Image (cartoon, rainbow, N blue to C red):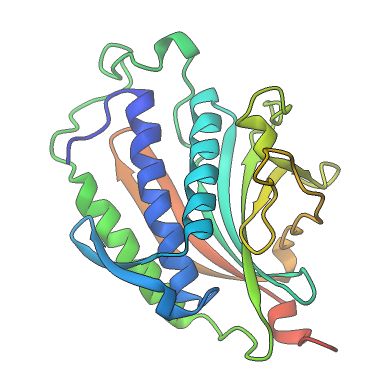
Length: 252
């Protein structure tokens, strides 16, 4: 797999990986019944992919929206948050720290990194091996997590955290309209929830919903996954378990 040598290629490479990772996360955490997933391979690694049309549609749409924000240089991190349906509280947060992604002017999105002087000798880096190793570590990290409460049902939400000096999506374009601002007084998060609580109806209009709250750092247990470095593509992955996963069983 060739290394991305432009910002546009970098965004495409990461969001392809993010798509694969989201499917694997919701399978490993049994967000939906495991029989609804198909065995597939990506990056020469065995994975699972949801075959539910609405879930696949949501993942495609939200990843495309993430890619749009990466190209704009606004994203500091992306999160996949597993939430309790009964309480709407976050149980686990899978973090993708994108703060080291380069920021590029719109007119330079297809300009090679070499021409901009941002890259050195990149040919020795095997990006596919990096992604494969990260997926392997993600699988082992999920095995180390405490089980989700057996008497509850779960959904998931994808959020982005914008950089401190960036404006959040204003809803002026179709892609921006997909995001719901989540508690802007506390954290610059934009959220979209997956089925069965889609944040956008079929006619393109947003449905009102309560965005999933952030997991406060002082209340989370962190499990590291892996850092990926492939040329200008640099990001880090970890998992946070919320305290309420252990302390607040459904109906308490």
